[in-house]
Amino acid sequence: MPKNIIEKIWNAHVVSEREGHPQVFSIDKMLLHEVTSAQAFDELRKRNLKVRYPERLIATLDHSIPTSQSRSVINDLQARHQVETLRQNAEEFGVTLYDFDSGYQGIVHVIGPELGFTLPGTTIVCGDSHTSTHGAFGALAFGVGTSEVGHVLATGCILQYKPKTMRVNFTGQIKQNITAKDIIMKLISMIGIGGGKGYIIEYTGEVIRNLSMEARMTLCNMSIECGARAGLVAPDQITYDYLKERPYAPKGDAWSQAVEAWEQLKSDLNCVYDQEIDIDISELTPMVSWGINPEQAIGIEDTIPRLEELPQTHQGMAKQAYEYTKLQPGEAIKGKKIEWAFIGSCTNGRIEDLRAAAEVLKGHKIAKHVTLYVVPGSEKVLAQAKAEGLDKIFEAAGADFRMPGCSMCLAMNEDKVPPGARCISTSNRNFMGRQGPGSITHLASPRTVAASAVAGYITSEVV
Image (cartoon, rainbow, N blue to C red; front, side, top):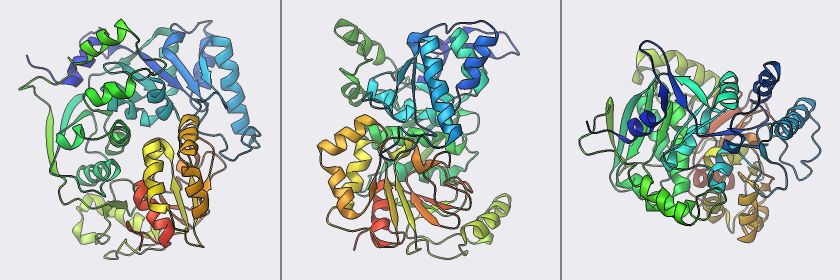
């Protein structure tokens, strides 16, 4: 039987199965951060267990840390405790930790690919929902709970039911100002936050094949926002060129053998998926979210939908969104005043994202009433940005160029949007209070965020 890439990788990792029970599923790699790992290590201690495969793990600091220049001084007691606990656990259990000033500290979903730790055909987990990012390399990557983190630490396996498969095929010619962020936001706006529930998605089409690895990571990152378990893109020469010579990537003859194996990670002709979707993006415009979940998004030239234009099942959430965001049905999203802007996160904190923002900001000043944070996704991205002079462009524009971390993506650190303030953000979620209690978030691409910061209102163009 012809198989799709999802089935090929999944079947290769089933250790054992029994009818009516979840499969024992092998995990090749796991990433750890300071927020979701502590209880898992505690469980090992209680059971007097060791980490089974420490070489399959890497850890870093990202979620709760400060991103100010003085970040080594952590004033928040809970954050400091989380950081110190991870440091102690890494040392005790022999886990490689990429700490501050290691050259590789950063958001887990940025540093994994940078290190070549993320490889095609592997299974990757992390106690973080946006682990789907790593699917850009043709890996099966998904978030797990803290108890499952413990299972992987102790055994290298977890229990899983086999998900369904979905193929999303993007067709048409991509416009110059359209990014992977716009493409994935379009999909989510079409199928909804539950449209991918129970599925792993394979993204296909010439549009996807022509995307850079960083753009593919953005695409796969937000797979979770339509309810999917994971999303992936089959590996190709773009993938291999990105990975070659990275620290954890195979070397010498092992590299050639690896590429030969990765070449088999393609969906067979006439393979079957449980669901298939085709989306023509020829007329796609920059996307912006208007509500309180990623499904509530529209093209920047469109108006906020009226209640009667929405399915009845969506109207309750829409009412809640109108009230929380202080927007009116039928109102234009373009031109809405903002006070804050954020460029960063595991969705858009890579060097290509910073380059795109710098291209828009160069020669301009951000609006006087706007605060713009630009936060690189890793120390490597930070160093590259400085080497290219992007930091000077950000500073000249009046932006605050900060140290690596999750930062303003979520209100788990010092970087918060004030109550009632409106922020346009490159992050992945616009839930109520996500960027700070009472804050209002509009999701968009780095280009749109940068243009809006200059204008002082939501727009995709600098006048």
